[in-house]
Length: 190
Image (cartoon, rainbow, N blue to C red; front, side, top):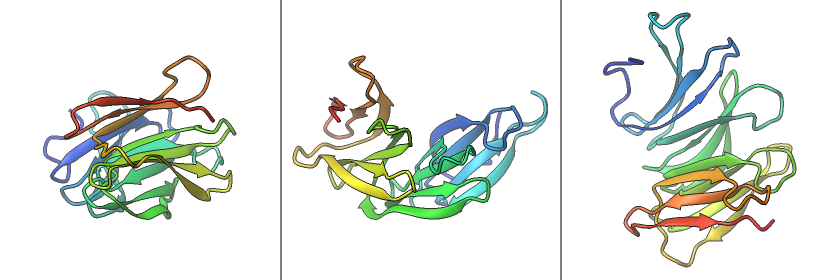
C-alpha cells in the first residue's frame, strides 16, 4: 500500500520515475480533489512507508508525467489540468513552474515524447471540452510552440499514449475518446 486515504480527494493519473535519483522508483500522482501534483518517495525497503511530496497546487490537476524536459539530466514533471485549464512543466528538483499553455481548457489526456525527432521531449495533450488534440514542440530551450493535430472532428479525450504505432521510428499517439466512445490513432508523419 502506497497510501491509505492520503491522496487528495480524486486521484487520476499516475506515472513512475526515480525523481530523487536514489535508485528506487517513485510514484507521481495528479489529483483533482485538491488540485495537487504530488510524488510519493519510495521507502528504503518494502516495509517502509512512502513519503508524499507536493510538486504544485493547480486547480483541476489530473495528469502528470516525468521526463527530462530541459535536458539537464534530472527528472522534470509535466502536469495538465484536465478538470481546469492549463499545461505546465516543473523543473526538478525544486519544481519551478513553467507555462506551456495557460489557456487550454480541460487537457485531460497527456503524453510526453520526442514527436519531431530532434532529441528533446515534446508534450501532447487532448481536451475533452475544447475537442482539441495538440502537441507542443520543445525548441530545445524549453520554449513550446503549439501544433494542432485534430480540431475539427469533435473528438473528446480521456487518455493519451505516445508510442510507435507503425514501426517507422517516429512517435505516434493513441487516444481514448470519452463521450465519442472511440479510440483513435494519430500517425506522426513529421
